[in-house]
Length: 388
Image (cartoon, rainbow, N blue to C red):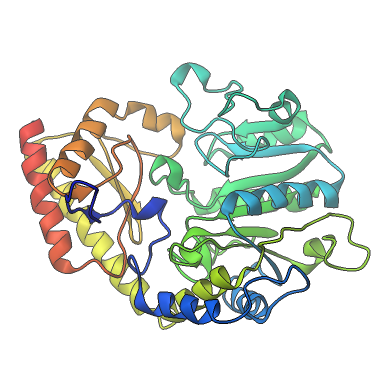
């Protein structure tokens, strides 16, 4: 990237993650240009690209039997809330401390909370309805007992459990398999809709999403960002028995709409992105580069005696300035925020763009090279020595 002053940066922020192939990927841009030569939007029915994209999502994503298109991840998670409430007739939602599911009132709660707000209502914005806040319950990640307690305290009131497949909005805190399996069991036992928010993980960590990796299938999945390599496109996918309640089917009582849903620009970009990912070579290469980056940064921290935990999965890496196990948001309260931001700012000053906000993840794309990773590790060593 080049800024207005002519400074050039090696970009790991990647617009919060959509850029999985690299900026201005030629195949994606070509597909969009071809789409622009046809109809833009008609506002009636579905166009061919929307159907083809739905077929691809159904082909690759374990939970997908039917698919609807949107433009942003927030729209998709908003509609997942409405769907779960419409299907169950219940109002309450369970999410986890530290996870982010978009800008709407229903789930904008308890994200990067200060220590004194853990266990309390911590809305993310002024202007949120109190009723929405009261109907959102907060559990601890990787703590199944906390989820069971909320379900018992709100018997027959919980419509959905929302899990950010990997809580990437606080860097990278991996959910344990037995925890996710436990969520599936609890949802089955209590008639709760299990929603995986794969807006970040979907397609960046594999065409099947993180659910294919962990082996647990939700009822509903939301995906966006890397699905279209930076173009606006999102999908809500799920089991037919749940999705049939949308108003797109005769008798469906859960209204869904949007003039720009399934726009040819977004669906064309998504189809081209999927085509580039289908042989597996992009994920194999970016995962390998991700492992090299994490190992390189960890080795420097250990050698220099700097408290540093480099977390990540696949093509994502997040340096935390702390030591010890990381299993939930409260563990991250040990992170040295001052040094975290200081490190990121110093990397930016040297042409390596990492969003200078504590705990934010970094993304490797198919456009990055081995030389880019080597350069980044070398610059990081210079920065960390100066910090020591």
